Length: 155
Image: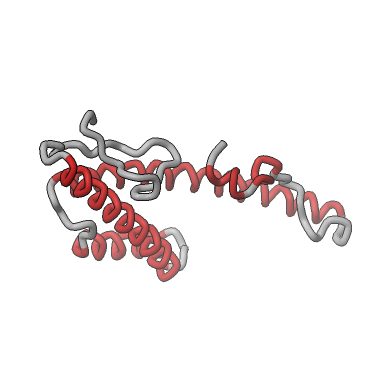
C-alpha cells in the first residue's frame, strides 16, 4: 500500500460517477458530464505518471549534483525553461502565467529534493569519507531526506 493510500483510505474506492449533481440534472446531461469527466480522469492519471517519470529523472540530476558538490538550483536553466514553457503554453492555448506557476512549483520541489539529497550525501561522507560516489536512487515512494539517508556505500 502506498503512502497516499495510507493517508486516504478511500483512495482505492474511487467512484468515477460520484457527483453532488446526481439526481438534480437531466440524465442525458449527467451522462455527457460523466463521459467528459472520464477523459479528465484519464488525463489526470497520465499527469501523475508523467510527473513520477520527471521526478525520477530529476533525482538522477540531484544525485549527480550531490556527488560533484553542485548547487541544488540552476537559475539560468530555470529561466530558460520557464521562457520555453511559456512559449509552448501560448502555442497550446494554455495560459502562460498558469504554466509558469505550475513549473515554478515543480522547480521548487525539485530543488527541495536536491537539497535533501545533498544533505544525505554530506551526512554519509561525514560517516564514511570514502563514500564519494555513494548516492543511490530512491525507491518507489521514497522522498529525499524523509526516511533517513538516501546514500549508500554500495550504490
